[in-house]
Structure formats: structure tokens, C-alpha cells
Length: 377
Image (cartoon, rainbow, N blue to C red; front, top):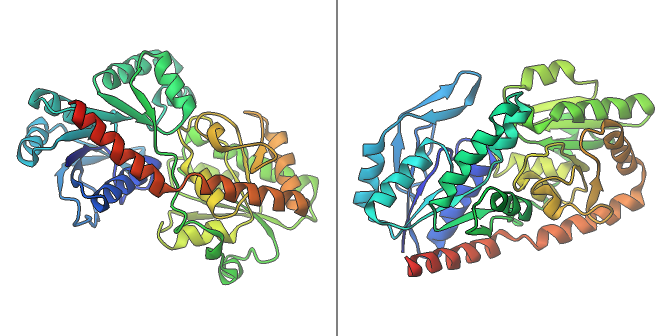
């Protein structure tokens, strides 16, 4: 079987879509698929030689240089389809590369599947552009209705797609690499080097952008410190994004910013070397970092919205707090830092939740689903 993936983001870019797409392709290669990729050219890209690719010229977004946007190249995408002769085309994103791939595959009579990873309609609200929410939703619906099947990683995301008229949806992609993210990666020497030894340390991992609401985590941490100045606590924030400088200025004492970390070594060690995970986003279709934290043995404080609601269970693997409630988030953080028995119970629940989300099982399901689509093609 031959798969061509068309995506607007791929490693070395660091985001959930890029990570899941790369894991999927590598897992399919291991299961006997021949895979190829169409993606924007990324400076410093160390291309995986197992995945031949067509790279399209790209430009960095001025306000967000970590993101690059492909320039229009329908001829190059059509040529990639024609020369690779795939049995299936997967358009992993709804932006230019995904849409060019959709058009080229449709014209060539090749079945197409899509992914819905990101709630861009909700993003418009986070960026003060709520008047665009409905037009963006209509555009997303038109794109996915052209596919034989749309994959999305949570039941809330599936239900949202159904509400805008996309019916051929399969919940897939709720996976985490249990070999890569686990408590055995904990390093006391890392805690010493970061200055957090002997301190209860909260962790946030993710893009530092408006839709992630990281400022609320900083405010909750500040409120925790103000309420109990003698409590030895720290907060580590891993990631980059357009809000980074503003967040650094806003951060109270005890916050450490790390930037982007290597996913194979440094990031798994950081997860396991912290004590709890805090997440404030309400726009996730999956919340991959939440699963990675659970797999690493961290109880989670988060808002049960979007994909996070699929795996956050209050009192079992973490503590759920209401959206927009900074005081409730601070109280939940204090409970984890001061109640060892509660913390141990939640750690056990977190590990059990992650064990149910083994990435290898998800890849087996994707392999079978793809073959079914091709057989019906």
C-alpha cells in the first residue's frame, strides 16, 4: 500500500499536528506501507530518509516565526501525486498544502482522507476575531466533507464536526509513546541543575500563544505563592511562541522558562522530573501533552474541555477546574503540593489512563482503517 501525506506542518516544527503526523508515517512504514510526504520546506530540517518528500517553498509568519506557510505550488503537488501513484492521500491539515493535496488527489481519482487536529474556529475567539468563527467553521466543513473519512482524536471534536455537517468521522489518534514518556526518565541531577531540588514543581508544556491561556497558569501560580509564601514550589514552562516575552514579563518569582526541548531526551526527562502538570487551554482536540504528562507519572490540573475532557477524570488522574477560574486552579495546585496521599492516588490513575492510550494500538487501528478506505475506493 502507498500513502501520500500532505501537511502544512512537520518536524522539526514542534506542535501536536507535526508530532502525530510524523509518528503516524513512521508507524505505517514499520507496518509495510510505502509513504511519501508533501510539506513546507523548513530551515534546518533533517529529513527522515525513510519518508521521501516533496518540499514546497515557505515563508515564516512575521508575528510567529516558528510557523512557516507554504507558498502556492499546485503543479508540484500534482506532480508528487502523479509520480508517487499513491493508493490513498491523507490531507493532514486544512491549510494550503492540505487543500492542494485534496485538489490533486480528487482530480487523479485517488481516495482522500483528512485529519481534524485543531479547532481553528475557536482560535478566532482567542485572538479577538470572533466575527470570523462561523466563516472559518464553514470552510472547515466544506474541506472535510470532500474526504472519504476524517480522523480526529476525541469524541468532543467528532461531535463538533457532526454539528457542522461532517459525518464520516472516526475518533483516532489518542495515543502516547509509553517507552518515551514514563517515570523512569526522572533525573535528580536535572532537578539540581534547574534549581528545583526540594521544591514541588509544576510543569506546563506547549506553544506560548493566546489560545493556550498560559497567563492564567502564571496567575494561579502567583496566587498560590501569595497564599502560602513558605510553600516550596516552582513552575517550569517549556515551549516557545508569540506570547513568550509578554509571559516572561508577567511571570511571578519561581517560574523557569526553558524554550523548546528535544522530544527524544530532554523533554521526557523534564516531564518525569517534575511533580504535576498544569494546562489551561480549552481549544484542544487531543491535548497530547496531557497524555505525555500522565504517562510520565504526573497528576494533571486542567480544564475538562475539548479533547482533554476525553482523558481527564477528576479525582482519578487529576483535578478538573472550571474555565476561567484562576482561584480554582490555584486551589487545585495547592492541593497537589500539600496532600501526598491525594497525589499518589492521582499518579496511579494517570499512569493507568496513559496505559490505555498506547500509541502502538492506535497505529494498528490506523493501518486497518486506511486499508478499509482503499478497499472501498
